[in-house]
Length: 350
Image 1 (cartoon, helix red, strand yellow):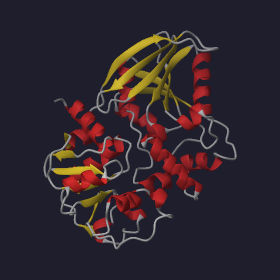
Image 2: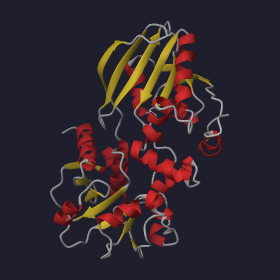
Image 3: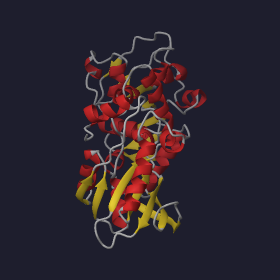
Image 4: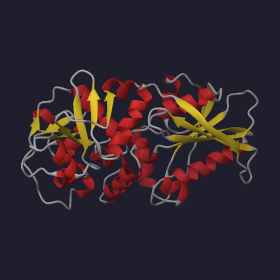
């Protein structure tokens, strides 16, 4: 089995609530807190000894940072199993949207972590699956998939062309749409090939999927206006590329994005909400975008963005950004704080 297919199988298994074996070094078997049934947990862990694995960021949100074993937010945290720690309570602990609704629980007892690499890899696999980074560490048992820890951490993004066709767009030059499948996680990304750019570095926009903004016109972000403006700018320039990347909610998935929205309703900003969920400020990766650009022969681009991380990520992946073209949208009363947070905490350019 190839590295790419084993990672994809691991993601599918976690989404289906199945056990996954993380191999390499000190192997572990994990079961997702969010999707596994209590019955499967009881079957794999009849003695109720499975420990709870969470991220350091989530441990800090649970006020465990003053405990030595949970003091580093960049390291995984292992919680000892207590009689009261069942499937329902574990999910309540993992999901910050329930922090104000659940009754007090505890005490939580963090344990020393020795198998750091496979635990980090397991949490990252859960994130790639769009799940809360919270897993049961179950005794060795039959697993639905086995994935090597270093494959999760160091997999080289690869894509394959699925299909390509004409796509007439109102007010736009001749346009084609193509779908590329990421071989690691199976996500299908779209690219619009707009007009012609005559062998010059094309004007490129990397746009991360935003259902609420792109489709429903949410005022909480600037994604919808950014998408429409990017199409107009690329069309006016005579041609270019717009990559529509399946990275909803800064890469945390739709369900977790809505959890973050709920936390924002309680006063957290977009960065702090992601951290409280156990994710990084921004989980997006642009390796697959670079792979798509290479497949299209666009190894030198003009990038339409205010995000310096996109420039750095493409450059690191071997795509030369010959020019950054600013892409500003006016604020509204609902997203002014969000835009300010992107500049202040995420380094977006004004």
